[in-house]
Image 1: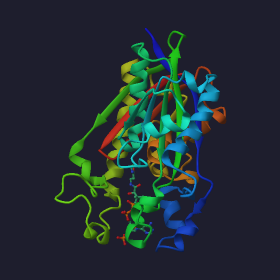
Image 2: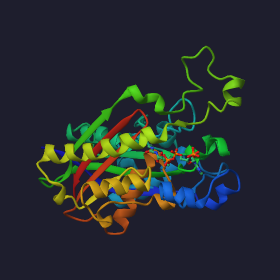
Image 3: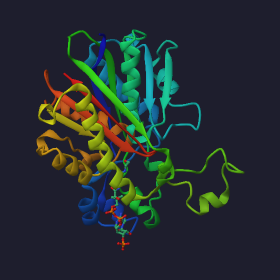
Length: 332
Ligand code: UT7
């Protein structure tokens, strides 16, 4: 059976570092609260003069393509995961196609928030398994900072998010038993409004009104406790699903790379499976929650640090707005 593999990984984060102390200057919060509740010390904010969702993705993609040992013209298809596209439409995938000068290949935008990277990986995996494409570029890229309520009113949401991009090249795996073994994708739309930006939206009487802006409706809303409770249930469930489907046990796992939503969620997952910190990746202290970019950034760093090597069994899992959640099990 033809399988796919992650042939190359890369990431890019904007240069501007925003520490918790920087946030203390613009809202009523504290470094102590943020670190204790989330594990975050700092995050990156984009430079409006130079960074775009698409070009940050391109920077990450160029590294991934080089590491995959291919040329950019070998890319057959682009999948762009983002909840913060450069424009309302078209999606940012086509902007990646333009910036990379790729010859009219297809570009798909995926709107699955924190699970966006795994959803995109699953789509790429199926295109490769079925022989449609040979090299698919998957990008997760987000600019949150231009859409956050950076006042005390929005502090419960704003302190956790950061900007960044990660990318992966997905190519055929030629070794038996290796590659992306299985993906599981889930959603529960009954909780769509528990973590959302509802306005400006298309189905109201008017798409955007002055009142929406005045009432801060244009910023993300999150029922933090509710999201937290579901995250700590659904991510372990998705990991178990991956293990059960493949007949593996959690002792076989070398590394879990969870979506970086909150260090306490990551610690909960480690505890649940009795795994030490060395087996569960956490880099949220440096970048905050970068949504669709968080897994490819964390995965790239883990690979660069030698934590993913030949023979490693790696499990990705994510949970977020939708609600959506997902897992991928990958044998290196
Ligand atoms: O990536 C998508 C998935 N997202 C997640 O998985 C996020 C899940 N949720 C969380 O990580 C947590 O719910 C948060 C980190 C967002 C919030 O932590 P929490 O422990 O659930 O805090 P809380 O919302 O229950 O608020 C506790 C207190 C409140 O004050 P009172 O009512 O107890 O007086 C808040 O007003 O903390 C206050 N608070 C803050 N204080 C200082 C909320 N945000 C802040 C802040 N700084 N930034």
